[in-house]
Length: 110
Length: 123
Image (cartoon, rainbow over all chains, first blue to last red; front, side, top):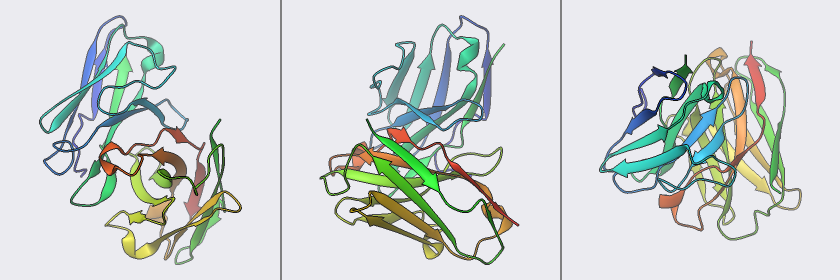
């Protein structure tokens, strides 16, 4: 069981909006900066969000990140079938002094 | 342009030691803030953070695997090597190496670029 908790699965219709949560604690999300990754089937993870809410070059504005207290959220608007993927949050944990990944959320766009 | 590529055996026997090499380009592990890490993913399961080495030889290991892992760097070859001892079938996974640069402030850690991964089967 991961220190960072994500819902195992979510689904939404094309064009809709979805919010994926990532719950942690005071030694990780409460202090440090969250990143989010998209993993399309059969591919390596891709950085979507860093520093809680910044998008790397090439990531559409439909993807956004936020953080409040010990929880973070990845928002995706205007869902497309190509957004079907696994999404992971990640962060540095000050107690473990290592990075951590959440358990991942499988997003289905139906 | 930063690229990373994993290489190593595709099949190892139980109790053997796995040695994986990450060969990278586009940055140097002699430059302040730079780091290379390893992440694995068993088939159908989540990502698991394994280890990370920084330009200044700072090494970090997953607490649950610390006794089995060693990460080293060869700056002349632009390579990072991960060794995992006493392999077991549960260690069957795709192993990824990835680039990090948090400018020395771990609060900002993330992996911005990843290799394509190497599937290792333990049997």
